[in-house]
Image (cartoon, one colour):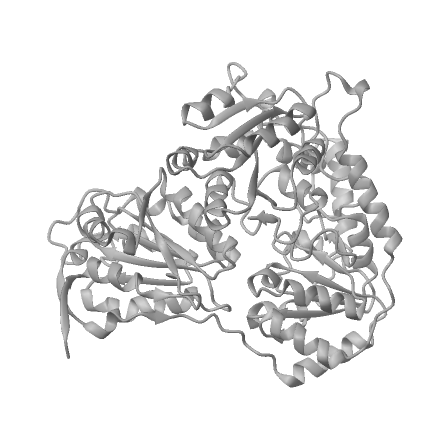
Length: 613
């Protein structure tokens, strides 16, 4: 057996550079790195020698570097991923939030934090956490519950098994998620004689598990018997590249489609079978379909509480739940008739089993009325509104009018996710939302990762002032790398979304908007100056008309553009009775009529919850 002598870090880098997709690209596109004493000498040296065979990019914060990597993987439909390396201590723990985000969203991410010395000779090293009762514990154990696969590399030869296991998890459609290889810093630098064949190019195929034929017949029988079926399209539709198959299935069998946050834009909003968002932040048309549905067909969805109205939305007396999912854990939730399979393969098989069967036609008028209401809600303010601050809906409308079919709207937390899910009208693939973890601070880094993955499309990042303040430093990275995208920063002077939830739950305005905080003076943050200081092109839009102008002007730049606009924090994103109840526990006892009324409303919603058939 021929061998090659390399350090453990050199071997890891060489191996990663040889792991390919079916399209002939590296599965791990490159490595985001902030070096410290736990990774600079070993991994840092290996990455420097690797050069373009495995590129290295420097970010500003370990969490946001990982957010960029996650957005990249999401935009690539899990066909490619990126790695992030950090020092030990705070560098590693900074990645815990990002790992949780990737775990919840089932997205591939390779985390390589440095770790303590395996030989323990210099213990305790700088930044080392010491457990008084367990000598094997290090700070990186924080990453165990938020990793799909966790391994601690304490000998070089452990990479021979750990690295293939890592890629197996990241390329497995059922178990996809973040992988942590906690790499002891002395081991990174240790030399070993590696088998040459270990570094041969390997192609990783994303499998498409086929459904059990008996399950197909069972599900087909349930759909044939349905009077009012509805499809709930989740992110699995997009990851499976099943968008066109879903469109053909819905059209052929006359089954309307409603969307989750992750599944939005699997069908273009213009598709006649797309009835829009479901659930708490849902459209009137979609939620009307959901309420009367006797068969709910989930495709690639976890049935998150926002989608189901905390399981109060699907209220038909004898409704049945069908769940098509690549993982049995999701397919069998809430008493569902599970169909464990790849979404595209399952829909193709179901379509063949159903033949020419068609459900009763959905209410096209309800869809038209909802879209007309969206247009009214998002219209530019009239002349009589001079002096009034615009709403988030009006901001969305302005961006919609100023962009074309190539635009991708992206966001993560605050008011905008609900407003965008309800009001944004995307082309296919024109929506990128991180709402599994709804992580404040994902937006700027996520927009950069999204644009790196989809350079041919216009990326519009919606972010509130609260999320922007959480994490904005990768704006400087995007400037340095000349990654152009447009940030629409809505400044409502606090946490407007949670302020509204606080009041709806019977509380008083407290600690959310700056005006209700315990501060010595109200802040006046100059977001334009701040963004400009990091090198971005930054402007403040005077009004909605000016916002449209600035959106158009941003397209000619090769750096990020930040457009700040002041907005009204009070109006919510919905209108009428479009939205649905959400289970947010309200205090059972209190001292105000407002709280008592909120608790009464809570009980009315809770009694409608239907958790299991």
